[in-house]
Length: 435
Ligand code: HAM
Image (cartoon, rainbow, N blue to C red; front, side):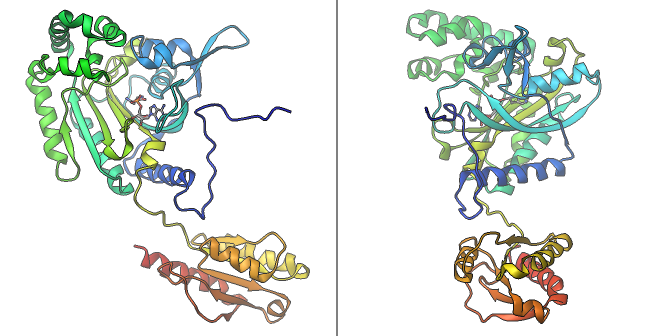
């Protein structure tokens, strides 16, 4: 029989706990910290479906974007309707606001889930990947821009991100954008024969996107091109300076006049966070303001700003260790006492959420169980056999000291009635030494 494989560019995530460099564990840890941070910033969770009508993305992300042009996972369903696996989360969030008729209110939202883009898989680029997104709706340009960058600084700090750089830019208001695009096209037209097919298409459909070109020839032509900052209003320039000044002590932040973003819905302030450690795909998050999207999709005029974080890329940059509750191994020596011993472990789990209790479920010698406890980095092994049960005690074997280093210490007995307090005390002690 033919073997069944996972699809190209789509990965299984399997946690292992024991291997600290396991990317799946890093991803789960990253997601946990992000959820906490979103709570700290008083955001509420939103979940929208993974499948949407294809038109939603055509009318939001836009016809001139690579995402819609080449990367959509679209299918005909059994009703001959064209549906798409979402390539990003913003369009679905706005669709939901309009459908629920809450697009006139302000909202502070976050989401986390898989996205799909039919891209050529390579380092940091997958066909199924995870995004955590934030969308703050109902606020005009100003304070809320600061809120976004503050959140990015906190993400960088809380996760110990290596070599982060935040790039910010402003795409201008309607008039300044129009004037800049006209001058850019006029400047580039004489060089048309030197532009590749993709850049020529951008020249006609969305000239701003040429600034993002990967072609070295185009980039050298652009060196003398008009610069967007010369077209921006005083307000837009001031906003960029204000943001830079507010956060420059906490994180590396620079104004990058060539930053344009690859989705069509952006209207003003835009940003990306990059790290030189990521290689060619160096952005681990991106976003910006999109004040016209809601009305463009048939809703009210709703000012909005948001961002999405590429979880796989962010997780690969994380430099802090997870401090899980300490692991304690629970070893039952004889099948005769299994049920009674299991009940003791069950009671401990009910009363104590400051430890992780690993009950060894398989057969095997004490030696092999202790080996497994050490391999899993357990702090203590609790051993219970017929003798212990008779004397209402448990044998405690220390394996690691409070700092998590291996410990050579004699085993000792603890009365079963004191076991719960004993475990609460060591959990406190270990947590204190990891602060
Ligand atoms: P985006 O820049 O297309 O923006 O994606 C955000 C992040 O998702 C990227 O910076 C990158 O880290 C990650 N990402 C994108 N494609 C892939 C891929 N194929 N494999 C792995 N990671 C990937 C958006 O999606 C907008 N919805 C952001 C936004 C929200 N703007 C306003 N609100």
